[in-house]
Every structure is written in C-alpha cells, then in structure tokens.
Picture (cartoon, rainbow, N blue to C red):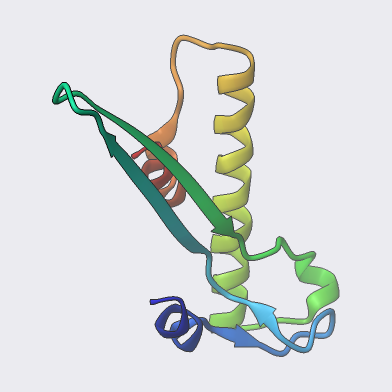
Length: 106
C-alpha cells in the first residue's frame, strides 16, 4: 500500500527544491482489541506527510505549479487554524474549510 502511495506521489522542480512535494500523504493505522467478555477497544493514529509551504516569490513557479502552491499553502493555513481552535478549546472548529482537515477529523 505504501509503495503504491509513493508511486502516486507528485513532486516537481522549483527554484527552492529539486523535488518539491505537490501533495499530502496520510496513512491511518486503526487497531481494535477484542476482550473475552465481548467488549472492544479501538485506537486510531494518523500519520501525515504534508507538502511544505512555499514562498511563491522565491520558488519561481507559474501556471499549474503556482495553482498547486497556492492550494498547498491554503491547506496548511487551514490546518493551523484548526489546530489553534482545538488548542484554545473553541466551541466551533472549522474542519470544513479544507479537504485535509475534514479528512483528518475522521
């Protein structure tokens, strides 16, 4: 499964990075323990390899690469907003602002 994901991973050359990741990768590990009395406990861990943010002016990207950079930056910004809202125990967490945060909400 991980080999397939690595094969599908998209990278490209920018002025800042020879192999700039253009996508996020997420692996979810879910483990369920069953007890003799019929009860179950489940734990879940999300592993995320996030594409890095880019200074568009320094990376020199244009066209599709520029659109990708903007989407990556927006996604990471929204992740930061969600993490801050969770840390501050706000009553509303804006998971729906990004596909990444909505997915990680689970």
